[in-house]
Image (cartoon, rainbow, N blue to C red; front, side, top):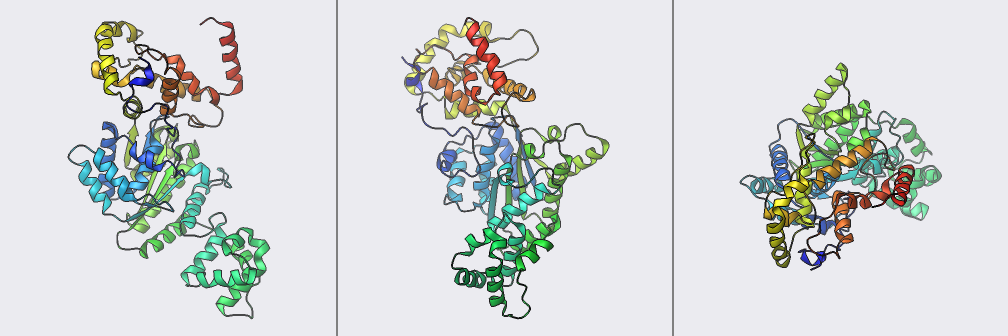
Length: 474
């Protein structure tokens, strides 16, 4: 019997290895295949408890190693807790999917409670949105938040002063009239014209003069005036958000879901402080109606690194804001891979039972590591063997540790260890495909996982490995 014949779901099916915040095409599959593990369920309970009973903290910090599913969780939360801009996928469907998977006494009730809170979700990958923004600018983080908020209101986020001009017109109830006047004068839509700011100055001024009813003394360079005077502080941003929330129904919320914030901040404590101040200002101005959810490769301690006394104070402040912390572990990864990829059909279970009976006595000898430095899990019983086969439990945490080591020694292309199409699920799927034609009874060996990350290594490291492969026997 071939290995491909024992899986419940087709191993060859396309699985999006890396979850992207702006990818809407695979959303249905991502929702259906999202696995709520025991660990995730605990984290969700704690998170929803804080979200539905607001006390004084409005931040959630989701951390975990490479491939542990942070981005997937963040994306699901964005769709679960609010309506995501411009997406036709209903919040209700995500809610029902979660409820059908939720176990325990509290989680289903908390999901229902969260459902009743009206909200809008702004989901974005911070590095992607910060296209024109240099990280060494002190307000880099704020600029991204402002840009995303402006865009969600239909303003031109790429240039803050244009968005401010549009917002002012909107507040005076003149924005629609201005767009009509501009389209008539310039002969094209404002959404196209605003991208050329300076070049369109004359038409903008003419349209502005028309709607403000003043021909004499109207500035002919209204946009230049805005550009010269435009500045944004965290307090202004929080005021804008609060003003927007006041126009919504009571208790409506605006939630920011920020992917990979840890990598964006890196060791720049100033950006960390920025993040804390943004969360704090949103908290005081909006009274718990604006939340910030972030993901990061490591927990807060690791992101800040070696702390001086001053940094220690900063750090305790940010901890007070991001009180709710969800940690995803390698146990989660294994459970997700078993449920999404390695589930067996009845034939498979029937074929693997006798193999376990015959071989179980050898597993201890094969997979116990005796150096005592680290202990890894072996197959605990037949059920565990059937659900994890053709992999062995130790391979998942060991592979994550290897990725971390490679990343620490800067061997990956790109800046960080989650660059490229490298999620744990993708790597495991690749191995399962590669060995699909072998007979049932063969195990996947650890070295086969290398194929999944080979393309992401720097060429110098790659060369050494190629030389070794050519010159050494198997």
